[in-house]
View (cartoon, rainbow, N blue to C red):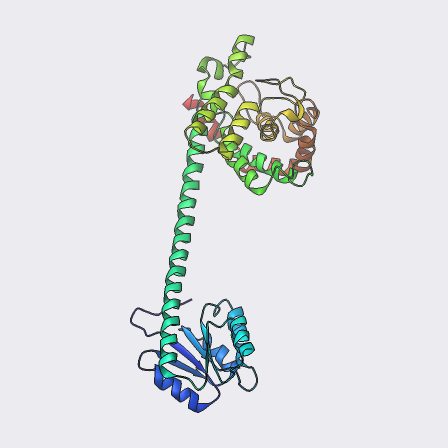
Length: 377
C-alpha cells in the first residue's frame, strides 16, 4: 500500500447519489482534507482503489443499485481497503438500521439531516484513530521484518559455527569436508522418507528433520580428543587402541552437553546433536558402542546417522581400503538389516539408494580434495 507524504492532506471519499448532499459535505471538508466523489456503489468501490487510497469513507446507504451496506461489506472484505474506516451518513434512523451498519463494518453512524460540527468532529476523530493505527501497523511490519532479518542472521551464524566445529574434527582424520555435506544430506533424505512411516511420523516433523540436518555434521566432533597416533594409524588398531578410538562418541557427547549447560533452557538442537554424537556407533543387535544399546532403545537420530555414516565410509577412499562401488555398498547395508541397522531404516534406504548415490556424486571428493587432505595431515 502506498503512503502519502507527510505534507499530504488526509483524503476523504464522499459517496452519495444526491448532489446537494455531496456539495454540503465537500464544502464542509475541503478546507482541511482532500476529497474524492462517487455517486453510486460501483464507482465508490473503484474510487477506493485509486492511489492514494482514501483515509476515510463517508457513505450513504440508500442509493440505486448497490446500497451502502453492500459497499461497506465489500470494502471490508478486500484486503486493499479493509483498513479504511467507514462512516454512514443516512436518513435511515431506525435502531436496527444503525445496528446493521455496525455489523457490516462501519465505525460510526450519523443520521440526516446532519449537524456540520458533529460531522467535522467525528471525521477528525476517526482520521486520528486511523493515523495511529497505520503508524502501529507500519511499526509492526518494520519490527517483524527486523525480527526475520535477525533470525536469519542467527541461523546463519549457528550454521557456520556448526560447520566450523565439525570441520575442526574432520581436519584431524582422513575424511574431507565433503563427508559432512554428504552425511547430513543422507540423514535428511532418510528422515524425509521415514516421515511417511506411521512409526516415525510423530517424531520426524519438518522442524525436527531440519535440526537433524544441521546437527548431523557434529557426529564425529569427539575425534578432536583422539591421539593422532590412533586416529591417523594406517593399519588395523590394536584392541587397546580401538578402546581409545571408541571414546570419541562419549567425548563428543560430553562436549555438546557442556555447551548445553551454558544456556538457560533445554535445546532440542543440542539434544539431537548429542544423541547423534553419542550413539551413532550403536548397533541394532546390541553389539555396538559405547553402551551396547539395542533395538529401539537407540535414539532415532543415531539410527539415521548409523546408516548415513556407514554408507559414506563404504563409498569413500580410506587409508585401509579403496572406495567400494555403490552397488556393493548397498549390498553391505542390506546385509546389516536387523543386525547393524534398524530394519525400517534399511528398507527406506533401499528405496532411496539412487538418491544416496546422487548425493554422493554431487559432493564427491576430487583428487585435489584427497591430496589436499593428505598434505594437511
